[in-house]
Image 1: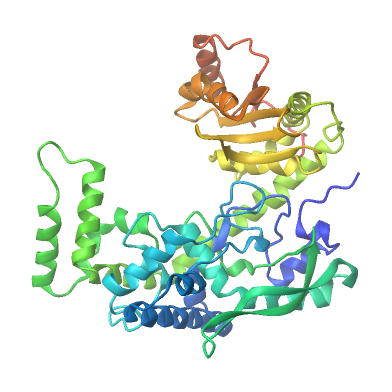
Image 2: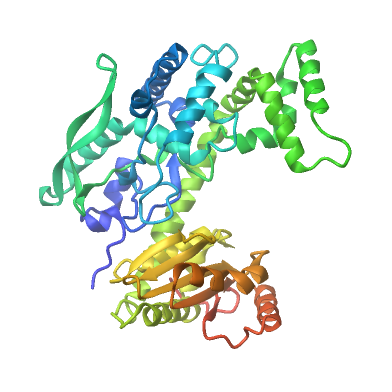
Length: 488
């Protein structure tokens, strides 16, 4: 039984051909947490990327002109400001498969408001080298990396479509492709509307797949982002040469911090956001500082993408191949039995067949539970069950819901032993999720990397009277107690 997890597998393309083309070899089972950072387009030495960034800014200038006119109907607002997620690139922050939320009323409202009321100089900045769409998301914390990424991807969609089409024509058998009419591919400024175009692209489950260049991708956050600006806010006024203005800004900021009782983190953040609204030029000074460190942005993103490739493609893929040598993929009678057996095979391969190596990058264990979720979802690609990640049934999200119709549901919670909320989660989460989802069964899987973590988990389980629970699994991913000859 063959394993087909990635673009290279699905379309019979050698991995090195994708790498030589400069694209990222995405998974077609679940989204990977990478996204396009518009700053990498702006800062690039590639003239095509720089033009893409300029085209994006031109579209924002068009929106600004329309916003300032004050005559945008609800239909036009939806046409110009709303965007679906470009799910076909299989990147981003979706919680199930590759279906994301896209950009709806919240984003449209924030963009429309900020273009008119806050960033009156957008497109004509004097402090920064250029204009940046991330600027429109810095004033409020609710518009973050996923929205910046979705907006960017939509605005460069025609480039990604042609980029993939060129690769398709050279490297993919025509039987695995199809001619697709893609909606909202190009914006026609004469007609003032998005228009479709046709492309020959890789065909997967009757939808097209997009490739994305590695050198415009990053992970975790865009180079210019709200949390970074807030974190480094007190350094920004120092870049202002006008001593009087600098003093006014500092005075305004400190007057907005309550001092009785002791100010909280939220108090500081509120004071910062009020100051940014009063003195929006501070955002330009922050962006100027980030522009001056453009080489660092490239180096950081390169390292993150390389690490992601090693973890999600090389190492996580190798686990699926190991599991394929067991009965992991055999069919079972119901989701409880299927889930239990898969957890046990998963545990055996990690502990006894060298699979623990896949959890380590440069000798350090993974630190994010979302990485564990991606791994487990990748290994379930051939199940007859529906596997939903982080499904929210009203009382908080469960990591996975395994279902075969309404009458057969099983939940799985994955936790790292290092999670500071582990005891509380063990005590309350799964039972709540089972009731909310009407699930028949639920499992907890806890992965530990040190002897200390193991002892702490055992202590917690004993305190909760769960030490002998058949639905709690501990997985030993230590690298200091395995045979040296084991290989992943």
